[in-house]
Length: 211
Image (cartoon, rainbow, N blue to C red; front, top):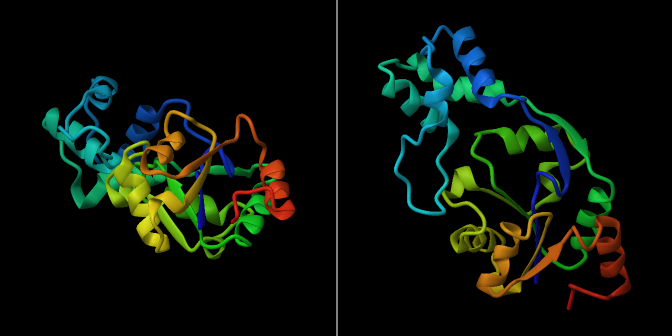
């Protein structure tokens, strides 16, 4: 038995740039990269033909967008610009710490997050009231290559925890993505119906999901 948590919108809230394309453009300029005049259009276009459900790392998308306009990203500027543009302001959600602590009473605890920005999950945890050591495994879409609700995202997380996907309860705020755990036989706890504090209380009362 294992419990996994979504990160953004579940355990933490993060302030994102109002205009991601502008934030990346500013970061590219600061690194000395040439930004095309029609960058907003280039940023919105699809440049990498990925399988359905696969994650396209944002630095790869940015580099491809630059190439589509005849520009380049010297010295790995695309990756550095993306990391710099998404420098998070983090707020830990009420009940998050209690829920993770209670989950540890059941067995392994994991984090499974859709995130196309390298380093964002680790930097988010550093700025939250949670930490890397609170989780036995951290699986991100940018690392495993698949986004929830694709089955392979949940399967990768389960492998990291050493359990079968059907033995995982996944906690998240978005039924369209987090609810994908049910396709591999696991259970979904919908935070639109059960608050984190209530989830922690359920565990400690023995009401589930612990065996």
